[in-house]
Picture (tube, rainbow, N blue to C red):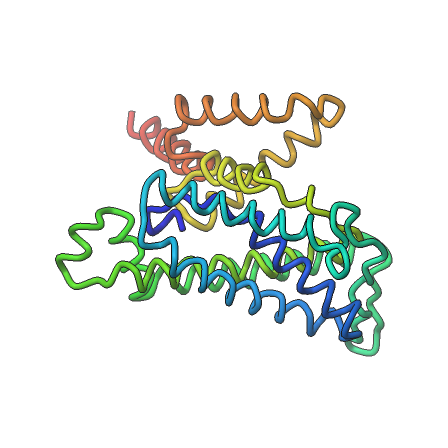
Amino acid sequence: MWVTGRLHFGLSGMWAVGAYTSVLITMKLGLSFWIALPMAGLMTAFVGLGIGYLICRTGGGTFIMLTLAFAEVIRLTIVTETKYLGGTAGIMNIPRPNPLNFLGYSIGFSSKVPYYYLILFLLLITAFFLYMMYNSKMGYVFSAMGQSDNVSQSIGIYLLKYRVLAFTISSFFAGLSGSFYAHYLIYICPENFTVWESLTVEIQAIVGGLSNFIAGPIAGACFLIILAEIFRGLKAWVPVIYGISIIAVIFFLPGGLASLSRIVRARIIRSRGE
């Protein structure tokens, strides 16, 4: 939603929808994870379509507060529903992804290595889709909306339509990640989907750099996750470390980590010219 000029704090709610949809499909219906994964994305996109149609009419602080509110409504619904969603106790013993048969080999998910390749595959698919989208007519429309609502309307762009579309697309990919998350941890509860999770994503995007909507968030996520692992023994200080990272980036790298290579390259060229 950044590219359209909106700050989305409801991603944790979308993750929850994807995670619980995937868990219910596998545990209640007995279907394969490989069916549950895309179904979780589609269900989350459907929920995002409904929510987006209601809140994408607003902007600024109102939009932010509404996304926060809907995320909390989803989380509190999970807390209240104990029969199917497990309530505050959560759901345990979530089945791992079914083994894959590839070139005569059976790939199981009993270790972290297959999960690494699965999430890498999902990341590459997502990055490819976003790259194609941002370099299409739709992407140019999104960029124009992010620059100015009034100018976009003056050239005939239907703002509500494209903002709902962007909200729905982001919800779909959030649903996929929620599904992966549930079957990787094999246990989920409402505390996995707090507002802090949504805030973390926004922080990672800012640190990475919003000038590049693909490389920036990836760079920011990698940097902050590695930083959190380094200071794992100081878990209570992670929010402080994140805050310091944002301040440092704003002062020294306004374009985020994604702009670092461009700055270094420019300095090298300048030094050679001298």
